[in-house]
Length: 252
Figure 1: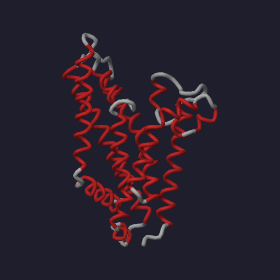
Figure 2: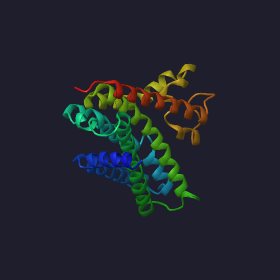
Figure 3: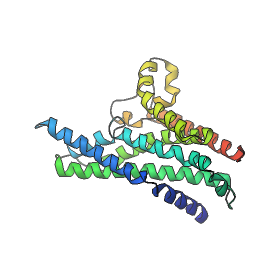
Figure 4: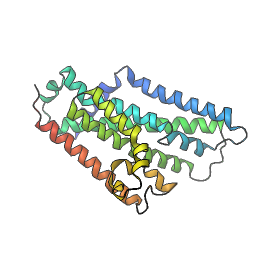
């Protein structure tokens, strides 16, 4: 376990040394500040509460989509860049299995995703307490944590999809394009196919579990448990495809 932790730590160091690493957090900070400014400028006397503002920020159609896109961009290069730079050969000659190496990369991107979401939640809540109405009701931090968890699940699913394509294609550009296209087309495909019963088994109909706490199921008959199982099945399928491909591929 200690050696695997060292692998994860090394992957985190490689990621954090990129010039774009801090830019990711700065971009989120700027987006949250811009949203807050627009709300203050246009809301008039009907200012949102801390929880309402944080929910707006964490929503997948709000700043949450920026978090997802940033996570996709970083995930796309975790494996493919190693192939493009030729450094993957140096990793594979070490005393670690291919599964351990790939697993450490996947855990690292999940940790990075988690850090982005926690950062967004803290900045949104802090800004909300400073600018907006504090009367957000009981258990505000519990509700904010719940919103962050829903966002992590949503982003984590697309991160896993992107991770798989990064392993399969070994091209960061193609992987970014696939990941971002999947996110951007989700709403359109959900709207077009929601009338068909088979669509409830499709990935994009089960990525946003927060709808069960607000507006209800996207299709009649779907439940929180159903969507959770379907989403988990897709994640396991993506991971299986990633590990099988990575273990069987010849490294020139």
